[in-house]
Image (cartoon, rainbow, N blue to C red; front, side, top):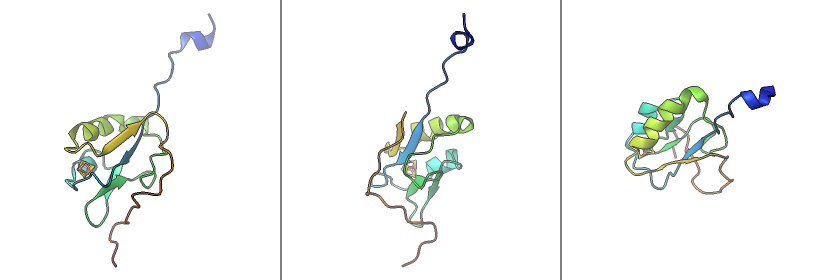
Length: 100
Ligand code: SF4
């Protein structure tokens, strides 16, 4: 048996982003997973680690917090995939403290 046959396969990575058109700005996701989610000045959530592009894998030490946020979002606005999200021109993120 080779070394590669003895080691378990690594867990697949998860990627996340927020459907900002669905988000109702309740605040739960950043409460549960502050390293992954933040809010803009209107309270609408976005993915913090990659500016809501869904291209950065969730760090292993954040997976439990992610699962809690994903489970508790009241409108299923937290999206997840096991590969990076494709590019999209929709849903630009307004930075915190944005003023017109
Ligand atoms: S938990 Fe869902 S609805 Fe609430 S702020 Fe986060 S994404 Fe928006």
